[in-house]
Structure formats: C-alpha cells, structure tokens
Image 1 (tube, one colour):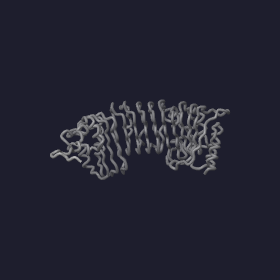
Image 2 (cartoon, rainbow, N blue to C red):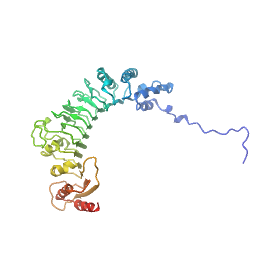
Image 3 (cartoon, rainbow, N blue to C red):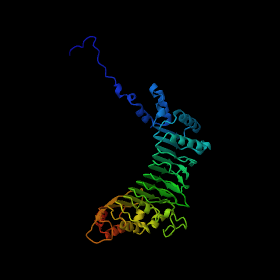
Image 4 (cartoon, helix red, strand yellow):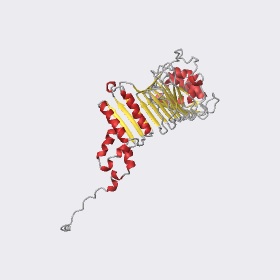
Length: 414
C-alpha cells in the first residue's frame, strides 16, 4: 500500500450544512411550529437564541394546558402575564384544557377570568377555539360570555355547563364546525347556526322537560351519539350528506307531556315539525340509525315516516331491525326510493359480529315499492337464531335474494 504523505491531514466528515438547520426557516414557519407547544414550553423557546427571543409572542397557537399536579394560583398569574405580554397578535388556535382539576382549586373569580381569556382570544381573531374540561369533579360554567367573531370557524366544548346565551352564535357568521362532548345542555332551548356545516354532540345531557331545537340549514354532517334525556328536534337540513344517530340504553327519553314510551302520544313538537329526528334527516345521503334499547323517539317518528329522497346508504341497528316487529325495516325501505346499500347489524353494540350475509334486490318478481337501485344488502350477526331468520324472511318478501341460502351455508359451516 502506498504510504500516506507526511503532513497530509485525513479529511473529516462534512459538518451538517447550515441550510438544513431549523434556524434557516422563516419566522412565520417557526411561529406556526411553536403554536403546537403548550404555552409554558412555547415561552421557554425564548432562551434558545437571540432570534427566538420574541418568536413565541407571535405563535399562531396558544395552548393553556393544566392537570391535577399544577398549581392553579400559579397558572392564573402565568396566563394573565402571558396574554398581557403577547398583546393581540393574530391566533389560529386558542385551547384551554384542564384535566382532572378539583373544585377546591378554583375560586369564584376564575369563571370571570376564563371569560376574559376567551375575549382576549376573540380580539386576536382566533379561528379555532377549544374549552376542554375533562375528568374534573365539578361542572365549569361559561356564563355571561356571548361570542361575537367574524373569524371563528371551529368551536370545541367538553365538560362544561353551557348556558343558553353561549349557544347563540348568530354573531359568528363564519362558524362551520361545532363539537360538544360531555356537557350539560339542560338550559339549551335552541341551537341555531346558519353557516354550520359539521355538528357533533356526544355524551351530553339535555333538559328532561323541554326539547331543544337544532336549526342548521347548511349542515353537511351530523353526529348525535350517547346523549341523555330529551332528544333535540332536528329542523330541515337540505344539504345533509352524512347523518349518524345513536341512542344509548340509559337514554331515558319519554314524551315530555305524558311520559309515554310507546310513541302513541300526539304532542305537538316544537318548530312545527312532524318528527323529532327523521324529518330533519330525510334529505341525507348516508344514514346510520342505532338504538340500544326501547326508545320513544323512533316509535313516534315511524308513525309519520318521511320520504328519504336522496338516501343511498342506510345502516340500522339490532333494536330497530327486530324489537319494533320489523316495522322499521319495512317503513324505511318503502320510503327510500333511491337506496343502493342496506346494512343491518343484528348484534349488540360492542360485541361485534361473526357472520356476514350478503344479498341484492332482484326485479324479476313484483315486490312492494322499494328501491330498484338496491344493489347490496348486508346482514351482520353474532349467531344465527330465530330473530335473524325473521329478518331474512322479511327481506325475501322484498325480493332480496341469496340471503337465506347464504345463511344456511354459514350456519352449517359453524
């Protein structure tokens, strides 16, 4: 091997190019990245370098996050000073999250303080506003807070007592998405948003004595899941594409005038609606109706079942398929003239299914007036029993073929 020449240095590995350093990113990009950090960590970036000293003040997100280990008094002082220092630089997101906080940690002035923090975010033209109080041992009220914003697009609420005036968001013309989880909505009489496109209400409690009304004519997607007491009345939603309703076993909804649960009461529904849920859902393209037990709502609505003129995909749960003496299947099929796909889940929620049977509509024989577009029918069940057989037999009366043979083959296999 040739000798290395004296005095010649071995080349070192090239140092990482400065062009790949985070410091080469524009201020706007860094401010956006800092906006994903909790507020305390965002402020700490000021010690990284001279350039980073003030970047946190213009971060596009402000996330105030606290848990049961934090000192609430210290948090108050920190946030007050934080908002005073950063001024009214524009915000994309303002998030206030308290996890597992005890009622003993709060004082009477904290409700007012939180309201002032929210007003500060509104002054910063915030687009996404989040108030999340999870696993706290007390209901936190946002009182005397009326949102007025031309910039607010998304609002998320969790673990709050929501006052009626807070739900009046007519002064937020750009609001498109609203998510409410595990909140007390007993004081809500009307949830009205002209511009809203996406609405999610889960695990909330409505009033037992009066039904709230949901007025959202521009709504594209709706999810009502696991709410308690009086189901809200859905007004017309002509733009609705996806609708999903799940009524849980401990729902406890009855007629507010006579406590009837059989759907026979002729009580007038607020807003001149003929149905509580189905009329508002009648123009949806994709629909899932899930009930885990006997419910007043679907029994009453099926007595005046509307026509689902745009419905292409429908999912019905175990109770709606069987417990209503198969009336729900018959009624909805006859009122869905363009239905293309039907799925029946004949198992309790959470247990899953072990069998899947498929069939399709056959126009060979004259049948009752159901959609001639029905291409796919799926029946999912855990075991093949008498109630499953009844459903399959009913479907065969509508000339939906191959289900019985398919079921027998599966039954013999198991």
